[in-house]
Length: 273
Image 1 (cartoon, rainbow, N blue to C red):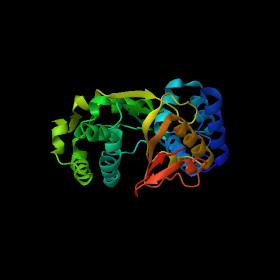
Image 2 (cartoon, rainbow, N blue to C red):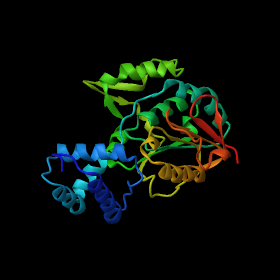
Image 3 (cartoon, rainbow, N blue to C red):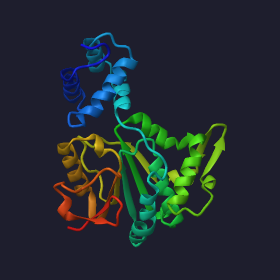
Image 4 (cartoon, rainbow, N blue to C red):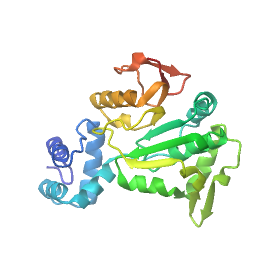
């Protein structure tokens, strides 16, 4: 074995262990992506052998927690892809505003930046008071960060630029309080959020929504797993509800594509049947 690098057969054994012992099924994740992440963790934690790594993972629940946190994807930002948020602001929220109550699911919410972005959109559209935002992720650590709503001050310049490009008209700093090198987002935004653990691979639908956002998560899944997740989303959407994906993700070629219509140029589809 090359020093510090696990072989494909080792990765397969680890993924089978995770599924068998803990019920975490990562076997359909993109092989290249998950191999890169597992090898990075193997190197950082200085395991001397694959056997030691495997033993620790099978019998140390605390280490399992670290493993899941390290190999799941946590990269995100507020108002990521501003034109996507402009489309939500101008085309989707006016429709959702006609509903008596709005349920939105952020699947794979990571550290919550996009959930807070949505809350700001809803607040500016005067819809936040009749909305609930369900934010879920498999990774407990990122969920806790999302729940706190505390982010680095250094990121606010980029977030403010994204917000303006999305059609925001206010001073973005009015949504947070700065203290030293951190900011805390306004608690009025998080009052309508529900954070909870959910595994897209193995968990079922838990409600019916008018809008589901799952952005930049499916690119790490293979086609079979994407298909299962799309079925989950379809079962979780009301008729005429909306599904929003990341800029490199698509419903095209999926088994549910015929029952959805893409809205505008952004990666937003509406369930039509």
